[in-house]
Length: 95
Image 1 (tube, helix red, strand yellow):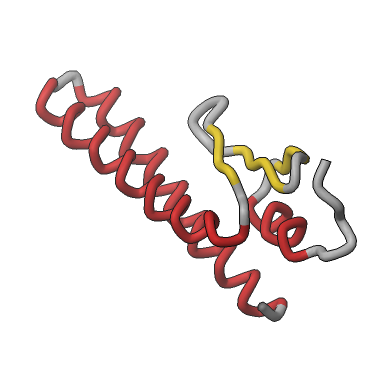
Image 2 (image 1 turned 180 degrees about the horizontal axis):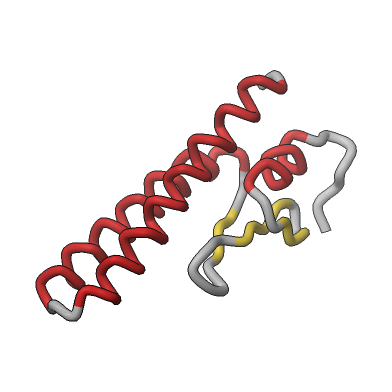
């Protein structure tokens, strides 16, 4: 994967994570049970879509809050691009 592809992947995932967070906020602020349920389902789907893009690189996604953090080769990363870069770094050994 070249730099442009890595940046594109990070941008795509970031958009999915932001849309997921927005859906969660919209549902929780709605005051409507049906809207909350629908928005939570959308949030979960968007998160799974982003996670599926990162999984082949060995990146594990966690949600300590509304936005994700990442585990790569045993190290914590806090941005999508850093996680992708770390996954592609052959000099970084897993712990």
